[in-house]
Image (tube, rainbow, N blue to C red; front, side, top):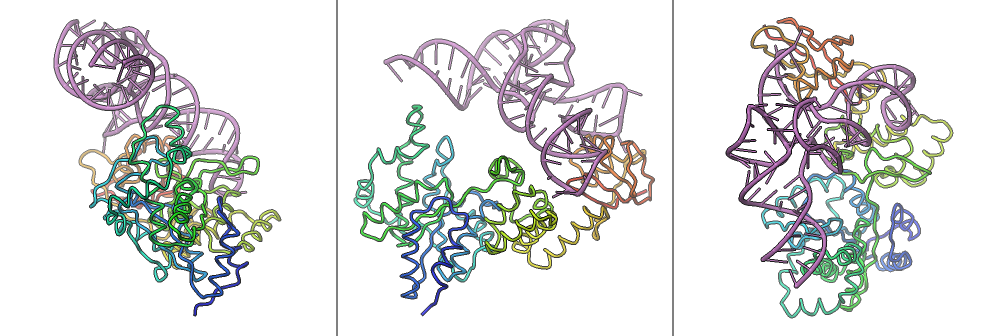
Length: 417
RNA sequence: GGAGGGUUGCCCGAGUGGCCAAAGGGAGCAGACUGUAAAUCUGCCGGCUAUGCCUUCGAUGGUUCGAAUCCAUCACCCUCCA
């Protein structure tokens, strides 16, 4: 029989960072039963395999699942391969495009690969909701739909808004929360996790379980993480959600150096929110760090702890160590990194102008951008700042160049003669 | 089915025949200041080995010496009526 840590200990970890909790008392009871019987809780989270590029924002939820796993419970990773084709309009103004079966399957694989960097593979039950949804007979669908009223559906914010404004709500959209809720019925899960934007859908699941004679699941939501550009205003974290389009994300597949740098650029105070939502450090440990910062410990040092933890999670310990060392070298000591790539450029005719060479070496996207950077003082050649974009590089010569400041790029440019 | 409004650079948004590579704001980038970040100030912000040339204002075709601006067709979006 499996043994679990004391319930209050489990609760303390599990409720960290949680926004909606229906209900804490239920979870406490369920944890007690689990501990007494040795039965792990079944903790479900559903994923729409539509966004194969995960960033830290997505991992908040995965991290919460991981916490359950670490306590001995089972994570049910549910791929909404059927519901993805229905398309949930949550957070969107219009219904999402429906996806083809092949596209869904491909995305699911990519998603999993990345998710397993956070989840403990050995405690995952991987399911796809096509398994049971596809088997539903029409009379069962009717039965499912009969369990929920239109007015309850219209309680959901985006439905209410759209109805109010006379915008289209297609009938299949009502099906989405029902099917997602039915997943919980089919899986008989104890807990369902989701982002705060999923609250309605999760509660539909809780409701439906009761109506199907099952013990209703506990619902917990985690916040949508802000981007690396978030700030603190009046003691509250403000800023856009982390997203690729806002370019304020740290992607889980990004190279170690980039991850580390971006993590270091998080605001001194905001980093504690990142700690709470993403770190595997204990709450007590994080609070200690906060006190230390208040007492004068360098915020750089504290952020480096976070940056390193993240890099290690996605790239392993050696990569974390190396990224930290390189950051220190390049940004704190303003030195040249160990592994500067060597690039060769071949001028076709005439001379090799600096701006042109920077473009050739792929250090900048366009020659114009290179000219701007150089004339604004953002480029160093062999350790000295230059200001003339037309500076001639000698054929046969090799130059060490540094471009940019926040995101420093280096290269040894060799001009072929 | 009918009537009207719209589509401008990464985003928002001005511009109704030459002074438009296109105001203003946001984002972004660089410099100064720093602790990396924030704040503040300054500058930049289509492309091109570049004192010039090329391509942009939904798409195509036209009018004109000259079009983001006028005309025609098409596509998409929105509002009102039925």
